[in-house]
Structure formats: structure tokens, C-alpha cells
Length: 112
Image 1 (cartoon, rainbow, N blue to C red):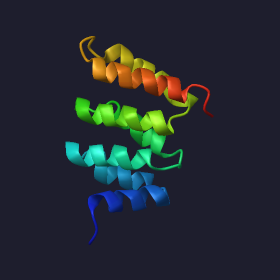
Image 2: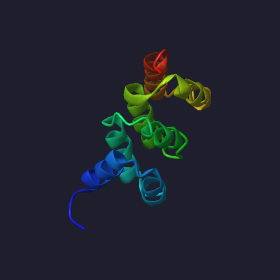
Image 3: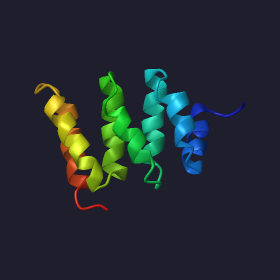
């Protein structure tokens, strides 16, 4: 198949192929998961929020940060609880993640 990883992910998101995205990209390398989070942020499809919520629980903090930044753009009121849970898990010295989560929570509140 031809095309960049970004364009392949973007096409799957546009088509709402959540199962294919989950199978192929949620268990891939860190770089791919970061690309996935960034491509989700560009979408208006509410289905991306489920993917992003999963990425907020990733073992890599860089993936988590990208997912939180994407949820700041796409997230709705429903994602606030997940973000609050994550905020309670973040070490106090990780100020970048804490700030990103707080911004995302503020952005998501009131969106339906």
C-alpha cells in the first residue's frame, strides 16, 4: 500500500473504522500512537474520543500527552471523568502533563 502512515490513519478515521484502528494502531509503536492521537485531533467525528481515551491510559507518557492535547480539541463533557482520573495519576513534578490535562478539562466542560 502506498501513502504515509498519517494519510492511512486519517482515511480510517474519516470512514469511522474504529475496529481496524484499534487492531492495527493501538498496540503499535510510540511514534504511530502519537500520529494516531494527532490525526484524531483533526477529526470532527465523536468516535475519536474513545480512541483518545484509550491512549490516555498508554504506558508511554508522550502518547498520553498527545492524547490529552487531542482531547482538548475534540473532547466532550463525557471525557472529563477520564481526564480527572488521569490527573490524579500524574506525578506532581510532571507540570507539562498537569497543565495539558487541566486545559483539556476546561475545554471539554460544557461540550455535548
